[in-house]
Length: 230
Picture 1: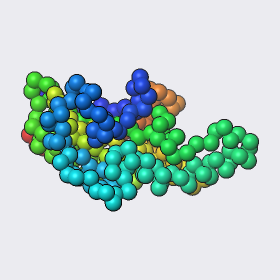
Picture 2 (picture 1 turned 120 degrees about the horizontal axis):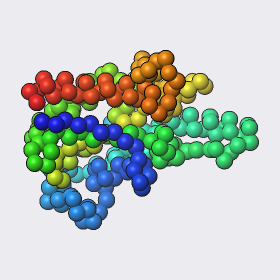
Picture 3 (picture 1 turned 60 degrees about the vertical axis):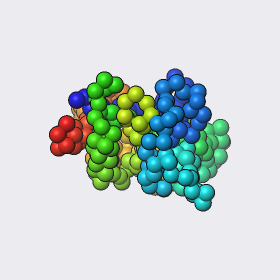
């Protein structure tokens, strides 16, 4: 059975919007979503933990939707970086470079990366339980191995479309030269010890640590699936 993990940050309409993942939009306008099965979906985020789509929203929650969760995470973790960087911009009279944490969320370089996990095809696929077990075990190991510099923000198990699949979003970060924690993928992976695929060649589009990182993730995911007999 085919197991896939696809990654991306943006499409033709810009950076991916987490509203799709937790169904925080008018689903009646989406032909591929079955409204009667939306309540079967399962959601998780780094502030509220796991919940079903049936679970009522917590009115006291600081961040209820995935969009709010990501805005809060960026505000709490990267405000110091943006404020200090804006101060440096002012000193050299380039305030047009100033950014907020919400600007970081919609920039292709600093927004969360989204991964989609699927086990099988429309015609033949694993059960939602099997996909859930494999994906959550993978994410636990992902956090254990990479959690110092790669942070899972939220994920959703969708059972209201053709094939069960999971959307998961994470951000890479590490300290910059000023000691500020900032979202930066290549430096985060370097801090985790990842090497370039071709160490003797310069860093580039086809020679970067993300390639090595993705290969390690695929290996880890396939080993878990094999352990489950798939």
